Image (cartoon, rainbow, N blue to C red):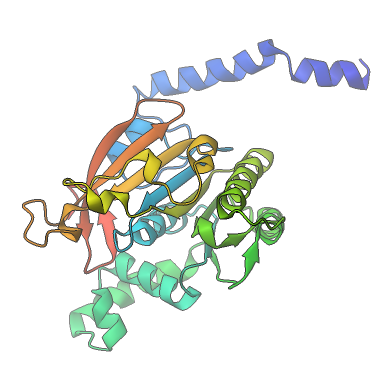
Length: 295
């Protein structure tokens, strides 16, 4: 068989179907519980999406102070610390010290404001001492370059995949990535970046998770609930993403809300399944979200 025939055979639908049947049998054997991608750490969200699949782009969007960076760090913790999966995170909205403090506080269940103010209690130190060794040994790699463009992200990701076997890339702040080609239209620049991220995910066959801002539109609605057309600066985010999750908390607007301590993960777009809303608990003092039943 010559080279052309080998290429044609590898692309034949029969070969693809064999892989599909293996996946279907695996899911059926697991009675619907088997993930087809990496977990997020949130049971209901993983049940809905089947996890973060290789080659996909997941966007987490919200208004400021809703907790999108916290949610992203939760995904990183679940994979790198709990499951020992090499994870690369580009933190473009804060430095690596701040992101690391966020991760450690959430993992050790130490109030993050205690760490910032230097007022940690004896119990805080005990909890920190118990979990810190686990954090230190985890394959979580943090990049906080102030001025980053797509070429650098692609190069760094490819390098870390080769050297550290990275299997998940998380980026906090898609609007902070500079495109390879500058434009007078900001919307076009963001659109180019998002499309490049999706291409990177497919070419490297890994899941990519990014955070994005929403515009002010939700604040002018009575219920404050975000919608797809609230994505700031670029509708291309909607089209390029495989999964788009909007983070919303009622108590961010109304402190005395009966839903204080709760958050909605609004899966507004899901290329491979239904859209739905997943409710989780917000433990703001620890800087983390958890499943509702989790202590």
